[in-house]
Image 1 (tube, rainbow, N blue to C red):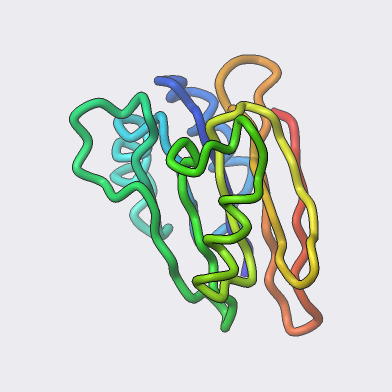
Image 2: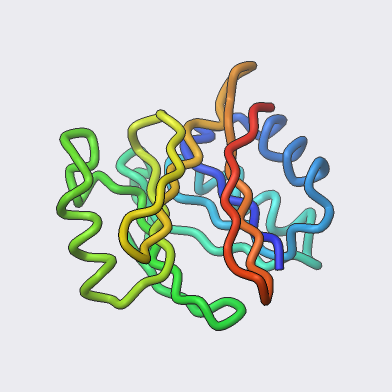
Length: 154
């Protein structure tokens, strides 16, 4: 299974649409906040894909949750925008929350800085900000052989 992970689109509908089209094998799109409006619009444009979303600190008035957990292909994914875990100051609180939830993968945004890491059984990804010409996004492939994470530029 391929998962497209995006964050911080900040009304950049064109970039979001473009990366969804660039990743036709992605069955699931996870939007990590600060772009609820464009994510909702893309959800309507691509009904064959599953869209999962959380609220970011710039999604004013949003009724989305600030965090969620889901099982995909037998792996538990914990995802959040990250501001409630102070990710701009370090990942300790986020990792602790992920481990409390027995997550295999933790996803966050907010910092606009792309990151993929592995820490003692926990895959960590921030896809960076998709907004603008130097935007980035993440891909997660979950197969029988394991988990592969990648950061790509628009």
